[in-house]
Image (cartoon, rainbow, N blue to C red; front, side, top):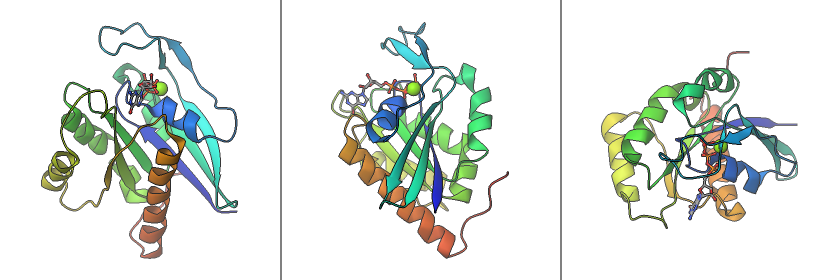
Length: 188
Ligand SMILES: Nc1nc2c(ncn2[C@@H]2O[C@H](COP(=O)(O)OP(=O)(O)OP(=O)(O)O)[C@@H](O)[C@H]2O)c(=O)[nH]1
Ligand SMILES: [Mg+2]
């Protein structure tokens, strides 16, 4: 059975845990703790280690969904989680202080997931604040990483159908790049 390992990355409050809960067909493993940084992102809990869920695509391809903690102080988990993943959904919330800067930082930090599979960007919380446009995100990507092809979408992580569309675009992208020999192998 074909299998994919996808990592959800992005800053605190972008909706990684929410997205995995929307998509997963098994009970999600979460590691939420009280958020002591409510002055930065006002929500009750934050991920301190990882999220894990699973979904079957087309009834035969198992997709393992992992989420990172957004806070940098837990970035030791980033190194562990990025080892096996072969693709990334990078969520960036429109209401982050510098959403485009955040996106570019995460692309740099998780660049190997592009090389191994592929990356899509989902801009969340676009209903909360009128932040940069999708064009602004794409232009910044093209300017800083002209060799990468990364689709950018607006997405609401609370909406299962929207998340599934983004996931299917990523999987198609990964499979296409693998078929053309454009990807590298993951470390074991
Ligand atoms: N209005 C609105 N709310 C959203 C949207 N996306 C996510 N949210 C809410 O924003 C919050 C996101 O929280 P989490 O899913 O915990 O975010 P996270 O990325 O896992 O954050 P950390 O684990 O702390 O890094 C939740 O309360 C969601 O319901 C959106 O597009 N619109
Ligand atoms: Mg989380």
